Length: 126
Image (cartoon, rainbow, N blue to C red; front, side, top):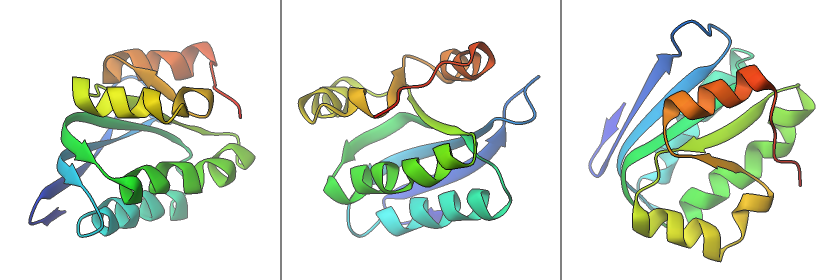
């Protein structure tokens, strides 16, 4: 899916068919967050509850973008899954830490590390 300012792609993780990767590029704000939200809801409707969000191509996330992750985490975990963030660039990761979201969501340096965390059964619970 492509909207001016954002590109969202759905990828199945290699060797882990039950983990889905949402690769996001661009920026997440009120004008683009709907595109990510639509992709995430599409996965949930397909009963995909083990999700890695690859943010390596994202340069900015507003409160609207962060709200999408936080807003769905309870439902995802109630279905035995989790949502893990991967590859955040410096400025995005800094905001993630300032907002203290590490107590709610796991952050990993790469999508591979996030997928591996599912295999090891790790989860950040609020």
